[in-house]
Image 1 (spheres, one colour):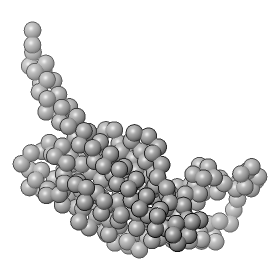
Image 2 (cartoon, rainbow, N blue to C red; image 1 turned 180 degrees about the horizontal axis):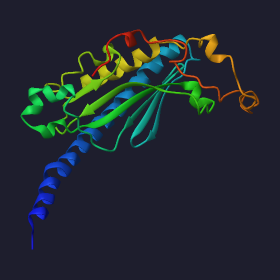
Image 3 (cartoon, rainbow, N blue to C red; image 1 turned 30 degrees about the vertical axis):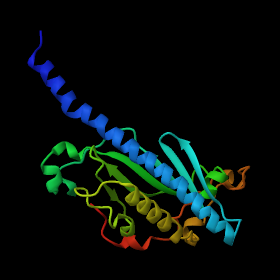
Image 4 (tube, helix red, strand yellow; image 1 turned 90 degrees about the vertical axis):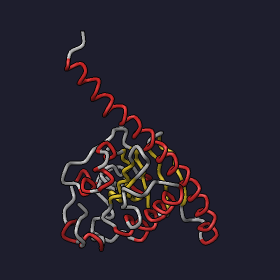
Length: 231
């Protein structure tokens, strides 16, 4: 005998779980497209960069179904697709979009995060090193998308959720902007005061001080971090 609660459960599954399955499929398709474009971009760059200096590393690594990495020079960019689906709270700016107001389920999004590490962090197993979140790409059931980043160069042209779909041209442009942004900023020496102390364990580390934390954000500040943080 069906009760009202039973019908409510079925209704919620229909309204949410099925839609989230659709969102997952669209996000997975977008992520596979980014993978293919990354392979293409790296092969193209490799040819041009090697003609200048064969010592510069340019490579693509497929880490898993939901993660890939591209290395260019001293930078490593890790693209990771989250397997869960997310919604946004009422204060988020996309909630004010007419696109969302016509169908609230359009706010359900899959997530692809892009992190910038130093390539040497992986090469020398420096497990204490930090990565920097370059961008977050959100994709919904209609393949509409938007990008969050502190770098406005990355979000430019990728922030109109209601009218833009993540087609090949858009995805390639986004990929190139992320690559360019990562290699534009160099690793600066950390301030002297932050490096005054070191433990005996760190100095005696068999891998020659690899436990000393390193990351691009140590010692300098991105210029765009002075801007107002994206809400």
